[in-house]
Length: 244
Image 1 (cartoon, rainbow, N blue to C red):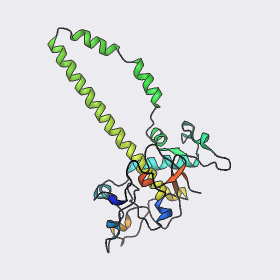
Image 2: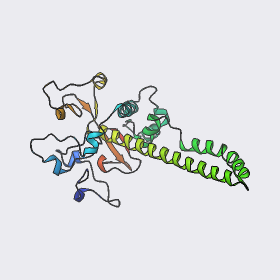
Image 3: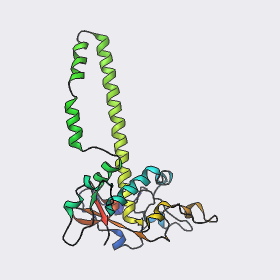
Image 4: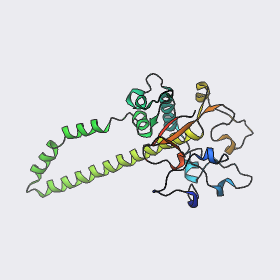
């Protein structure tokens, strides 16, 4: 069974449902990916369930995830040097509501210090052609050069595949962080966010994991096309902002 019971998971064509924390107040969320945990796991007796799968249990938030959390918090607060000027948050302000609305793609670009797609395309066009043309000219009539050219193309394809896999992983890390910001929020006191939390020496391993529940936290909400939705099912380049 996957992270969510199949009967309750919306398909691609169905509308994204409203937040479960409003329609189903006792919903349990995974401490790693921020998705809602299926009823089969939450109904296990005498067991504290904090993860939706063994994969999430083995890949708990690490230093990079915490960096993304800090990036999201700084953007939502509009802190200096947060990179807010690289987003379109100010263009989304409504009358009487100046909450910053940040998309997942904007968070990814700032957290990993990526350039815009237009800038990457311009740099690619500038350097395209010269090296490849020399390679083709030198390969004419030379079987050895043709083999070297083929190996170079294979190596280049492998590098592109690795870069694509890395970017896909980073993309999912950002969306996991955004979902956690929605369902768990951030500590109200920034000092509490930086200080390691302890549940006591006698606490079990499961009890020591996940966001502590005794600290006041400010939570976010997920947006798609201007509507507040359940983050577990949010699709595409969805956004987050503080809850009212």
